[in-house]
Length: 155
Image (cartoon, rainbow, N blue to C red; front, side, top):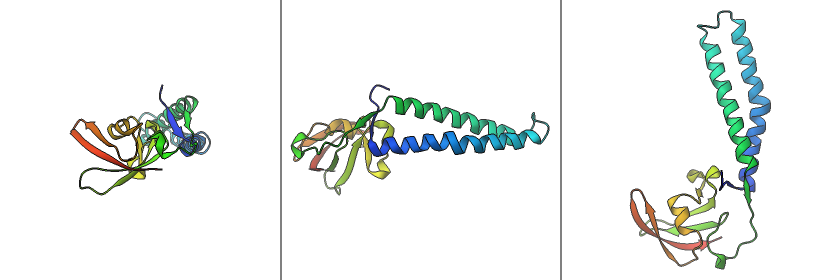
């Protein structure tokens, strides 16, 4: 993952998930497998199959998080000035046409969650506004069409 940017909070959240999966969840799944195997016939045991599937998911997620965290670049908040323009880790307020202003934090793709107000630097809006300053109007190109947003506030 060449551009794997995370905030300190995002890194910690993923590290906590990894710790949970390695310690608690792995043991829970192992206990489920053990209980299902005690039931006798494994060929037609739905609980055993479900536990094996969950085990595969947990192990896959552990591998994914290991790789993600190993290659992560932490976004530093260096007290960025408004004159620096929009950067990874900055909070930005934008307005599109007559719609209400929206405020986002620009983060890496692994941490993006629009419902939490975190948009990816690789998303159409994130890509478009990076490097731009307060007062600038920026063209955002999306698969659904092109529109303009005005940067109202940074920070």
